[in-house]
Length: 264
Picture 1 (tube, rainbow, N blue to C red):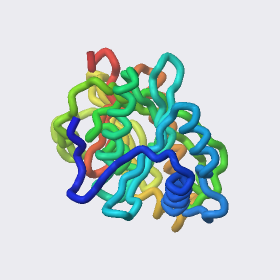
Picture 2: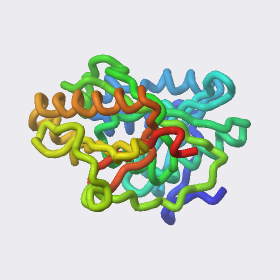
Picture 3: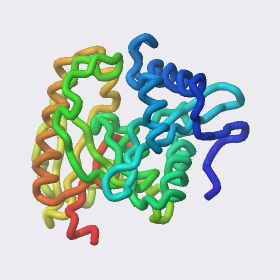
Picture 4: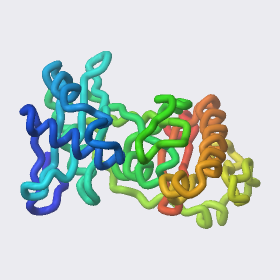
């Protein structure tokens, strides 16, 4: 598979101590932790590689510009523990993980992300074509890094069918486009007073809004960010219990949740 990467960018697996230490520092910078207290210590990464996992690193010239960690899970599927990359390199890093996993016989990859981070939802669901299949309440418990501190650590599990064709990156409809053709009333009000969620009258879809910048909101108003967390959690847990999965994210911050039977 040809990787989608800009000129001058290379991606390779990392096995050596110095390379893994650099990846550890990169993750510390992304998650705004002291380098003396990284979210993924180098010795942990080394152990995962030794156990058959993979650390992929993206280099823009000689500069480390992205990294990911993946391990095998039950049934031969893979689990992506973490992935981060500079703007424009996310697809290349995930494709490198995908090719590694396919080469070892895996067919599915799973990982989790914060469902309130809309840009990550759009990347995972819309660009990669993964599906949100499980909502996890306060999955990690309290987190003290500079990105998540002060919030509850809800996560959305996504499932990526590795053998599926690469999606054409569809443009999911905006809220205005949806409401122009759907007349069902709003089912929830957001903490900012606007519409949080609504569904179509046939019961096939639910749409749910997230803040434009939850990381900035956490820093400016942690209480309001927490109200958003709990409001979105209520929508997702009810929808998932009723057989919905997360299938898309619009540019203006609206999830599309689709009832499983309607997607078959």
